[in-house]
Length: 319
Ligand SMILES: C[S@@+](CC[C@H](N)C(=O)[O-])C[C@H]1O[C@@H](n2cnc3c(N)ncnc32)[C@H](O)[C@@H]1O
Image (cartoon, rainbow, N blue to C red; front, top):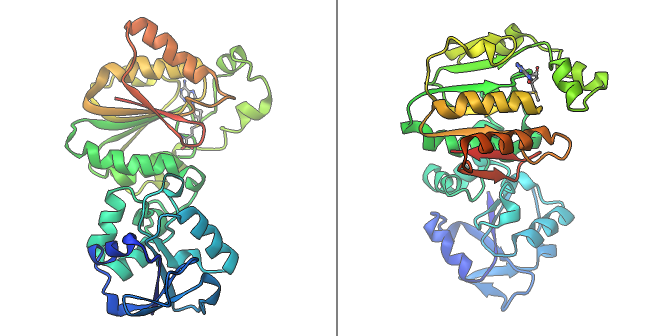
């Protein structure tokens, strides 16, 4: 394997921290080299790199956005580029956890992952647990769930999702919290038409889009089906007889009344340290979700402790 290191500044000192042995480095890359050599190795312009299937680039420079664009322009395989530095816009730029492990070893790769510097989780790319990729467009929410699941390890209570549809997010919850009971609430017949109409969702597309699912289809996708309790029907009636505390709840029902019912049911049952992910909170096309929060806060008489996530449609994390 030919390891190139992009950057000849102070970032290069990070390499040893990550366990890269300088003698394994083939060459350095720098767009503005200050000399022909660095640490006894040649310094190449990006255009002079002879890229082949065996090449691997470790980027220790700060300008990771520009570098990423340059790599794409030069046709370097993004799976074989590892960014060591944390840049907000690059949270997900590292494409292969396996490569990070291969080059840096388990500990260093885990350190990158743990400090949210950005390597996608192994579950994301390679494990059968999250491997169906149907959450890929919403990786920020899944990455947040990965972190949340770790933090919730010592928090007591069950997990739940209200609004399951085909179980894409439920599958992630079940995969990441294998020791928790997971309640799944859904009509499995789409939305309540009256509720949808009262919020201006009159077209058949809205109602019908969520009917093509079924409990057994959802159950089959779950990696730990023995933990799953499916409650089919209209929430909140389907939760009347449950006496549980909840460590984690995903609320994803799109409309105001059902979102409000979810908050009113689950928030008082959240165990200390527990979290609710309220999906679509910032969605311009589903304004009922944030209205439900305003209504619930008025009833509570205080603001919820909450943090909006910048994921697709905006999730509000309520603690
Ligand atoms: C946006 S989908 C959920 C998406 C899902 N979380 C995922 O990972 O793909 C919303 C679901 O909420 C269900 N739903 C909405 N209101 C409900 C209610 N009051 N009771 C039960 N299910 C409801 C709908 O049937 C639909 O399947």
